Image 1 (cartoon, one colour):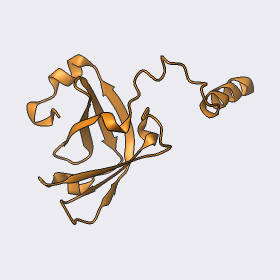
Image 2: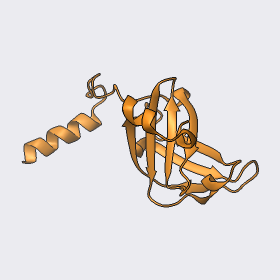
Image 3: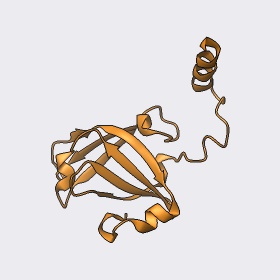
Image 4: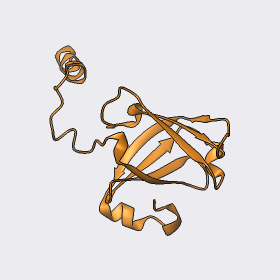
Length: 125
């Protein structure tokens, strides 16, 4: 068991250790498109480029997301590609000049084409 743990940790730490296949679901911050928050302000949906969609699950409600003029402030941890929830540091404010509130990211899931198509129109970014 110890050898497996060491190998997994080495794969996470060593630069270039991740395979191209494991990075296929990753994206860069400049690929972010539109985003939409769920009515309960605990889930975000966003588009990457023209045809990829993601669901962001928040640990708790992020109340500024309920406002029509909400601003999403993104900070990418590590400066590299975004591959998991750990890479995202999100805040939201109630429009220009609003005080940003932390939106704690619990999970990030890429939606299949069928899942994205099944989103209600009001939740489709």
